[in-house]
Amino acid sequence: MFRPKLPTMPQPTGLTTPPTVIHPTTITPGTPPAPVPLAPVAVPAPPSRPVVQLTPGTALALAGGGTAVVLVLGAVLVSLLLAVAITGASVAVCAVVLRSLLASEAKRR
Image (cartoon, rainbow, N blue to C red; front, side, top):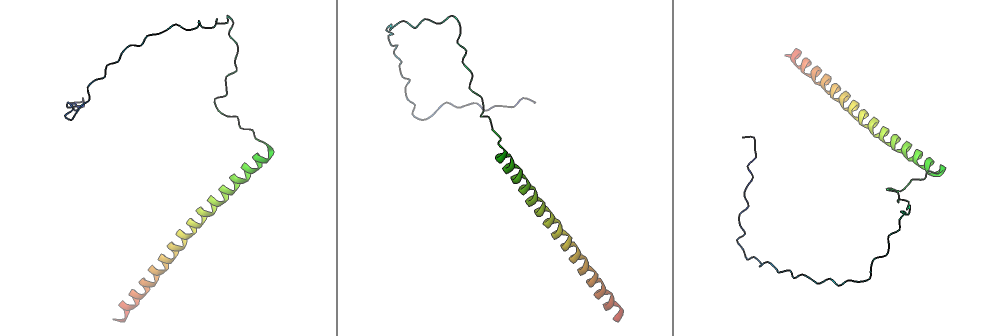
């Protein structure tokens, strides 16, 4: 019940290529390998990622870019909040006007 049922793969029905025969190759001995030095040579490992150098100019540019992003984001959010507030106020005014019109219509009859 808790084990998934895996579908079985059907046998291929189309044209299949026959298996290829692999012939072994002969290995001819070449020059002997160079002798391995006893003491391993210390090779400095390349850095896994590049190192970022922050100069005063780049730090200033990053700070200016961050400030610009914060200001733009703040302006967008404030404008959205202002749009919601104006919409709410206009809906409230419309509701008051409609209520007044309906109340005055009821008094005239």
